[in-house]
Amino acid sequence: MSKSVLVIDTPENCGKCKFISGFWCRAMDGRRVPNNDVIPDWCPLKPLPEKMKVTGLYNGEYFKAGGKLPSYKIGWNDCIDEITGKS
Image (cartoon, rainbow, N blue to C red; front, side, top):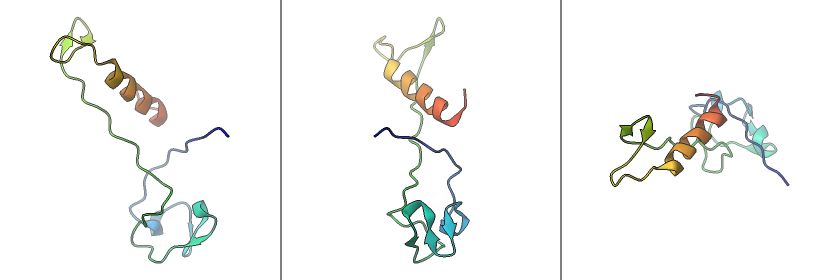
């Protein structure tokens, strides 16, 4: 089965989540949330990973020490930008 991603602003706690209904988490098929003031470890909402630092700039290309193009970092950051709709 293919996978999908829904990007939303991460709530501070369950009480501020779009998927909460009283003390019931609709993202988890109605699982009871014991405390709306915290986010339980079983919460399916996971934060996006951070962008990677790309150091140095030479002729419009990014380089790290040793002169190798860190394309994996640029690709990682491009992927995060694509998911979030940022450029």
